[in-house]
Image 1 (cartoon, rainbow, N blue to C red):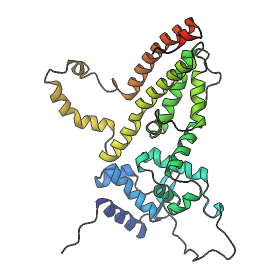
Image 2 (cartoon, one colour):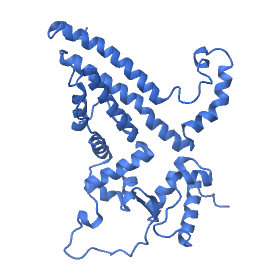
Image 3 (tube, rainbow, N blue to C red):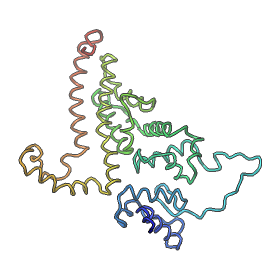
Image 4 (spheres, one colour):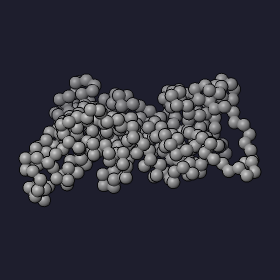
Length: 322
């Protein structure tokens, strides 16, 4: 009986290893990127990602920040046991918690949070996943550290906007920019089970700092409503990233492939609203335009609430309606 053919990713791994073994690719040379693999072999982005992950796990390649994935130096034979009386330290592998967190963020940014695992992060360092547990308790703890580290990137404008609406808008835009850099972050955050992240909380405090004359319950509702609007809209960033990995097509390519199907729907005449923008060109409705439109309307509504509460002053009249 014939043996089953290896899966596509394994055939591509074997071909890249052949190039390395033959000297066609030498240590330090860049290997094909995920996008190049999808183009050369006609596979989905998820398959291409699995190819590079497997090569890293096998020690054939390594990731170099700012460069990409390159052929690794041949590994020397390892000692069978450490020198007597010596215990492994962080300096033996170069691992520490900050490096693990940064590597995990890099993986999640490129491949999405679903692709993140302790094994996947360990592959970035060429170590076993057990080596990571000396620095982080588990994946859940790692993702919490990643999210807090991401919020640490936020730089508050100086001078800060004085008006309450300008301050809320600035805070929303700081979050939006952060979610664009880290597409996984918006979907990770929870409104119903908020995570203890002091840096994220500090940004929200800053965002609401100029709203005056509003009782604490109303203020926290305003803050959570704004936060939830930005994060729920930004959740589309990771959706798009995962869809591109699964299909191998970016948003524009996917929309082009769906164009015949949408044209058939619009020709029915049953959808005049959608038909009204047909032919208006690209960029008329995007995640960015939806964010801008929704943020302005949301702040318009907040202005009504903040103005009414400020006029009413503190006390029972400023309570939320039952």
